[in-house]
Length: 550
Length: 76
Image 1 (cartoon, rainbow over the protein chains, first blue to last red):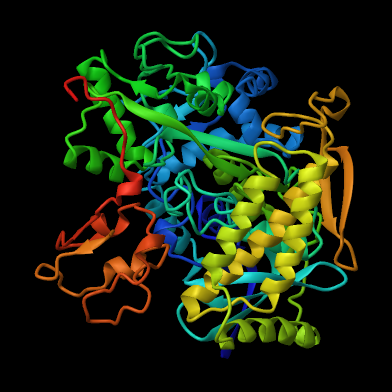
Image 2 (spheres, rainbow over the protein chains, first blue to last red; image 1 turned 180 degrees about the vertical axis):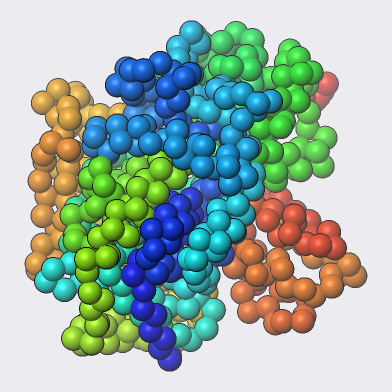
């Protein structure tokens, strides 16, 4: 495999919402900026198909008390779970600057107003403050790419970065592969911003035999947090799970865009919040407890339907407008083809698979615990508005930082880089062994059965032992028949690293909290309030675990 | 399995293969009708459907993804 070296001030890894926003801001601040994406920037990341809800604080709408708004927002258990592992001062800074981003996006061509006004709806309890701005995000990626290029950033598609290069002081570069050609790509960079998104492929999909039916993306494999961990950064509470919910089997995000009532087979609402379709407030019941749908189903009280019957024509048009912007075009097309009409047909809903919510620890400037390494987006804060705002903040701070730093040569790291390259070459040269999919399925099985919805010390210890044994085998046997498969192999190796962290974190968190359910510690431990499990890689490769205040 | 390319309509521009984040068209040759090399990795995002200038692509949603719903008119 040949090699290419790219030198830059700022390297943004991942061209999702966070990476693009970071790239735009860093370029605007005068830094030479490269945004590298393993897929294609136009359709990568969770924001690929659009979005219609933007959590933000607009003083003219919400009043002057930001802290009250933050408290009110975090009353929503789902949002609170998404923000687990993110410090309060980071959340506060996000809210302080969120309106600035709303105005920027509106100016750049992502419509943030509806009929000339700030329209808030969904993700809120009836009678409470509305927390999420409705916006027309269908073309958000297109707009952000155009802005990034206009700002002078370079976007490189089809290159997967798989490891960071650090020296005694901090990060100095990164190493990647082309996902299409036999090529290594080495980056020398003054600062790096990782924004590679969620961890969507660690647990079995809601349709286990069909991996692709997940609400997120199969290519979101926590690459950023895996490489940050290997480089020595703090990872926060990787054991904390999150579960989304939506249409059964056709797994999609956007549950809050539905205007309807979740009902049992007898037609009774399953929750106390709405009894008829309500344009402003969707059914919040599963946002209180996402596994509620699964529990009802498994106890024989299902199926549970999203029932939009009785919706007015005006509200139906309103909902369909936002469904389109939310990124649900394939679902709408499918319903049309199958003649499914939500005004007539209740749609079955389900709880989706487990997603590990672990984060790369960042401070209010977007800095990780490694000098020169920043993080933004779902791998350090959950949600699209957080990605946008912290992408911007980290780009700004990384650009300022890079001005005082000299670009370092990665030459002295030659042996380390050669070793990494040799591992890759072995994978591609092997003729016999498990491919990425076989390994990934085996990993998902272990995660679901031993670190899944029910956890205990005995299960976790056994699962960790099995994972270690499998890992040893996989490291010496995984094969790739081409660059596409090699990309999937590197993702799966990241998943194995992060799977281990889930086990480690789950063992360390000796309590039940949210969806982390320990049968041997069934109570929520109040002394853990405000604390998180911090994990970093020790010098000898073993994880070092601390429980401390975030 | 998704996506399905209408070979008569396809003008071989390769835009679908260029944009697909999952690169399910991996290995497709420039100037040729794209090949769906990894259909099971399709995210059913329909970006190729909407990107195709000839409207030559449709998604065939696989049965394991079928949407389940209650039809009040259904009788056993």
